[in-house]
Length: 259
Image 1 (tube, rainbow, N blue to C red):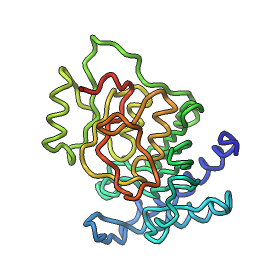
Image 2 (cartoon, rainbow, N blue to C red):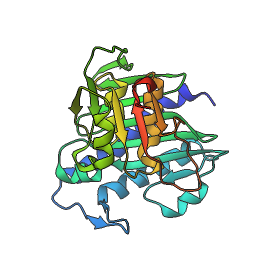
Image 3 (cartoon, rainbow, N blue to C red):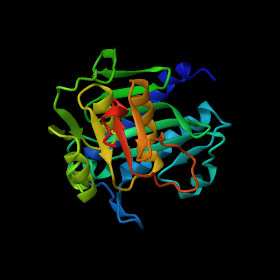
Image 4 (cartoon, helix red, strand yellow):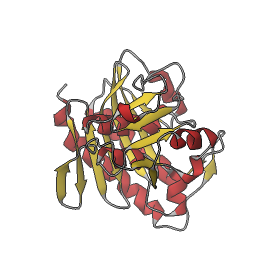
């Protein structure tokens, strides 16, 4: 499969999902429910899910679609096969807070690796895409440009992406090992994209996430020259027995990670 040929269609799908999300975003009724894991889900999550599943199934009928909003689809996760992995609305809490920092995430998983990812932030109309060996790109407004991680310099203050809601004891301890730092705030998978576009250096996530939270943005960051690794230095893998990710570090350079 030629991955580059898929990108225009995936971007169009992400935009269509973004449109239905923004329709709910603009309304007063969002149909908020609470999942068994105590996280919120809205009408926008489900509407985007239906859009993406229909479009991806038509695009590649032989590749199953695994979605956060379809528990039965988890059965199609396969560490040795190919499947689509989507988070129709990543950052539901940001969506409910109306801060614009939520995304549509589409990833193609092949042999346990995220080989292609599209991340779209509909509230700010900003699209990211890429994959290892494919490069990484950003479309904002009418401007499309390649993005790369920031070049390494020992003299710079380390710019750390950190979420206020996930600054636990372990994360504080990790940040303290980095020396002089400045904090960069971002929501959802945009945290990875900040590193990919050179606006930040490292994003430690020492709190629970699921595979659909990271797959698309990992591909973008790897395409931009960065990496996403667990605490043993291994790249995050997909289709594991457990959908939960281990703690991980997303960074422009693995040399920044304290050892």
